[in-house]
Image: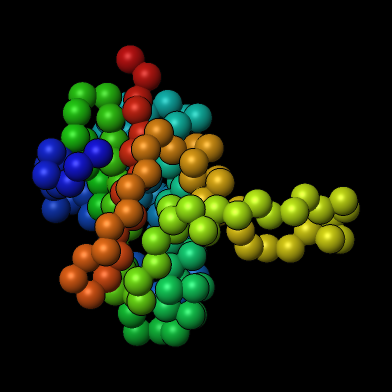
Length: 150
């Protein structure tokens, strides 16, 4: 969904610090937006899951866990019954949707063999209706879209 077609309201923006503890601020923010837009529980869960994955990746990998950085999460409604979330940061360039980053992660044969990493984009593709990435001046923007049931 192109950024030009959306209207972003100031109250629909959340600024987070580059620390994992700030992930706790996502849930009440998503819940408030879900109430405003009458988002069903299943879609609210998908939104939260995708945003938590994207934001935690920025903090862990983009900012490498270093404090004193910020990132923003915005919400817009580009069309009736659609929500679009943007995660913007000032981390080094990283396109999570690039084909080279979607290599298959081998399946673990047991929980002991399960290792983190490589599953986040697959999770986003499963739960989001649309994904887009763009490099911005000095940062990254990941857009995650959701269609709302009528």
